[in-house]
Image (cartoon, rainbow, N blue to C red; front, side):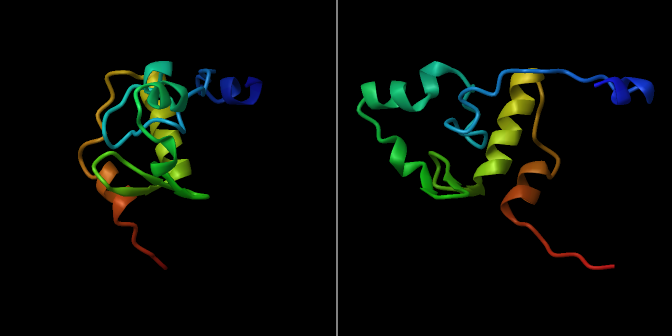
Length: 100
């Protein structure tokens, strides 16, 4: 934290709970109401969302890397009004290999 402050970068610490259990692509808020335990109480299966290690399926059926989904949810938790428009979501769904 102190090294970031030395170069003018602000560090914001946040709780990452429910960020990997909720869908960033569906616009779900990363909170208990959308988490696995709440989904079970509603009769929904949380297992359908995690295909296998590293892969997350949104409610719309879109596949995204689970770490990317969690990172997007952490950003949304810190900046609730952020928009992932303008190619950010598309870059997540359609990655391209680039070599210089």
